[in-house]
Length: 479
Image (cartoon, rainbow, N blue to C red; front, side, top):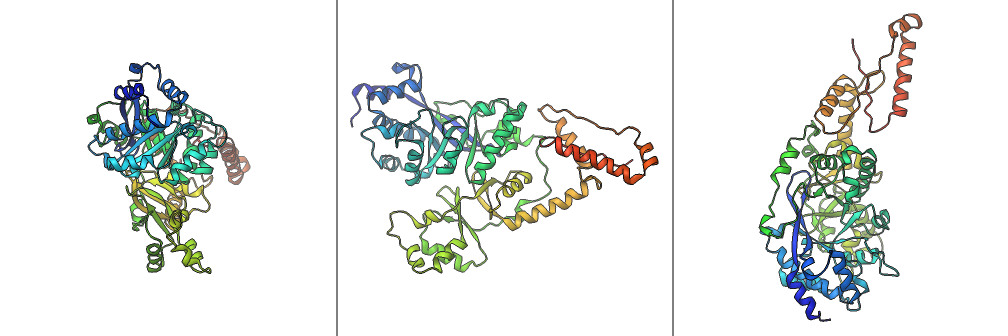
């Protein structure tokens, strides 16, 4: 379908601004989101009004393709565009258009000499679709074509966690509502922490969207978000020369975070730097790999940008090889869908900059986990096996036992001192409460030390029962 002349002229006036999305651990650029500008100049009060009009005129898909090409061509004027992603917002009513067809984006990318892995389609639930034109169908369509998919405004849409279960997108962007003043709001922190925990275990990257303050940034980093976007980092810009590879003011904030866990454990020492395999590899090379590396139980899979997309399990490969006609099925490259793609399993992903407590929590929350893929600047860096994580946990438990009060097993003096140092450097508000049992020496003298110990243990049990996370319960010992 040909665009009306008026809309061709409108496209010449419309412009694209880009806003950076950074790695929250390093401050380095991960992607840019494309945002439409100059819509007022063509007679619309908002971007939504503009898209509603082209939808009403039944030219939404044709218009979007033209805008898509304009956006991608401007994206290529960013000096280092080949190493970052472009987040492009899709109107989820595209499938309703009579001229919708397959393969158009692939042709645009070919014309612009860009790989699919550079593009991430961002989908929101602003419009609830009826019938078969729903979010799941749109996501599956672009996933089948091997595009990266991001869910915008996560947490306030119609489907929510059902989308994670049914489609497993590559990225979710937590809605700004949950992040505003998150450092002061326990309910928001709890909700976002659970969203992040589930997403990361499924191998989904999480963007903290709309970050405006240092406190919001550091809280989202502590919770486990991988990426961040917002005015604190940079406002959208029409000038692509303003998009830089890293953002020094964010790096300064991260490096000077007094609350950052000073872990004595070196993840590097436990990391398996196993060479990953590309998700477009032939199955015969996968079989040969497992045959040559008998001790490998899980093989990380990456895309062309060295980003993890999941793992291959040796057990599943063997189940094919040992079954009748299994090898023939694996090696059948004439099938419409890649056999390798169907065998890729979700795997938890964490940045090398994550705290050990975050890594252990991610692993512990998934009873069937074989390990975690570790990234550095959002690129594959290594694999942390289940055995390695258990070794780290054992070492940490030994260290923890040395720092616990021997009677109550609550954190002892050393951990109390570390915690007080942490909160005094924090931007959060804290309430410190000190309990002192009156006349305790006299009680011991009358009833004996064993009864005194029972009183202390009873009080410790009450604290553990009623002062649960995020309260920090501890026991000052010694005289």
